[in-house]
Image (cartoon, rainbow, N blue to C red; front, side, top):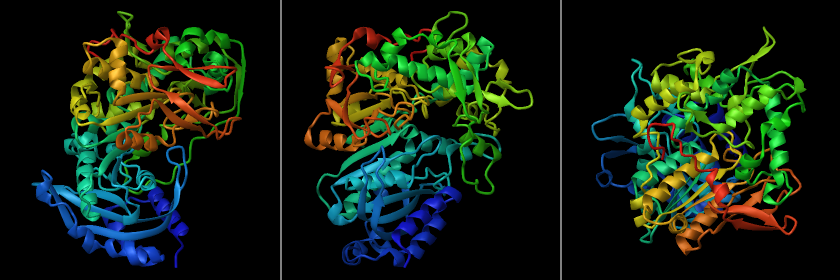
Length: 624
């Protein structure tokens, strides 16, 4: 009999190297059903309910879900026993889990286009009357097994969707453009908000029927990055869908976000200097060293990027030596045959380009590149700010340059996410992630602004996801825990602060700043995570905490009324504080340590808060 561990490796390997179509999932379910029913629990309990016939019998009636037609013949169901969820920054993990692995397809009335759903249903005695919806990352709408496993730890039936893209590892950019070059709006709207919603309403009804319960089934959402944006897409549109959501580093305000990935190259064009990556990394490390103790504690973590902005100047690095070994591009498994050439480049260019060994000293122009990069995008005529950038303690990945071995020199590097947005979403053209409609050397800040405006006209109702009025969600008693790594180098933490501020102003327009924040905190709290990177701890600041048990806090708030005044977090890095438990302050309060760095207070500091609230008066429209 094939061991469970080997089975898990088999599945993970398949996810890395093959397109997972619905037919392949069916074949896997058929082939493994007899192999993994090995425990007495499964034989006597789970296997009795985890059958195709039983799942078909408890499917929601299509007439109860507007516009959806479930396909009972598409159902697969197989019992999985003694499964292990490894501990990670996102979940405490758990072993010896039994669950029912279910897939089902649906189409919309009047259309034959198929969307696939995937649910993991805990063994009945482990079900805690919860349903968890999960999202994806990048241009993917699903995180597959990783997201599904998180729900099992909390006794939740958990679901994900392929968005109608055709397989579990197909991204939106694979299918956004039709063969004739026009946008497939059905799939765009599915990605924007519809597919997660439809998966959720099916999943909630399926859970109630599968467990034959008349009790309330609490519904939750968890996701980070694109998954965070997807969570907000549901809160903003479907006020009664979730009781609680945990959204991290959301990729909302997507038009700004993706175009701004090209901003680092624009800064270098304007300064006329393309620094080696090692030079920028040295400046970042100098920032961490200089700003570490601004929060009152020496631990190698920048907990107060606001104070860092006020007190640190990149010219402090001028003349300091840097020395780096050669870096290599990340290794990816082979792409499936038949994929468009540009897609793999999009994925590869989410990471820094390879660079040779480099040594030297930080230059005046290198410091100027860093300063202008941190400052953000400004209009060339009015000199007013258009949009924000990253804090000084974040890695400057978007400003990393490309090395040309033929000339032994550096030049601007085209960020793949930014290029793919301009090419696919604006120009509606399949193109390499290493190209733009105009040469990168000729791209200016004003061109970025023009692209943002063009994108807003086309995508404000889909991927922008920045609607600030959440009245329906609040009225239905929903709770929100919103978190963001303060040193995130992929999505600026300030993006989350801007949205939090927009919701505060919109929901409580007649109240003072402090009163409105207090009212908002009753149901929506934002936590900035000191030192953390993008949806994870930051290796450059290994003593930084991360909120591993965020769903515990959300469940306690929703089901037991325990407000997370401070959010629990754990230090996961290999630094001197590894394993230490800490708490995070709810914005706008900021951390300040006393008693020689042994006691943390959450303090109100208006000067500090103001650094997070730019006017953005250089942009012709309100920025929510």
